[in-house]
Length: 122
Image 1 (cartoon, rainbow, N blue to C red):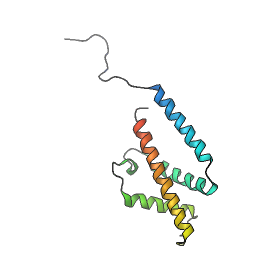
Image 2: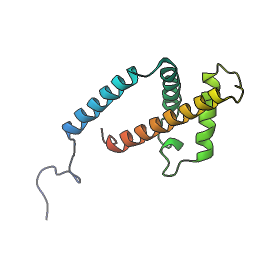
Image 3: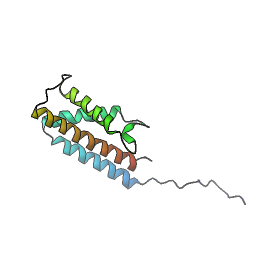
Image 4: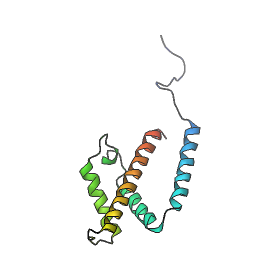
C-alpha cells in the first residue's frame, strides 16, 4: 500500500489574514504609545529594552507560571535605570513610579506572551 507523490505528514497551515492582523495590532500599539506622557514613554522604552533582553526560547518570561520574585527583581532593576542608577528615596512620587513600572512591565509581558502564542508558526 504505497502512496504516490509527496504527501506531508501534517497540513501546512499559514493563514495570511492572521499575519496581517498581527501587523495591524502592532501598528495600533505603536500609535497608542505615541500618546504616552514623556515620563511614561521613557519608562516604556526601558521596559521594552529589558523585555527584549529576556526574550529567547526557554526564558522565564514564557514560563507557564512566572516566578513573582524574579519579576519583582526585574521591576526593581528598571526602577534603578529610570532613576539613573540612584537608589530613590521611598516617597509617594517614587512609589507611584514603581507602580507605573510594574503595570507597564506586566502589560508588556502579557502582550509578548500572547503574541508568541499567536505567532509561533510565523
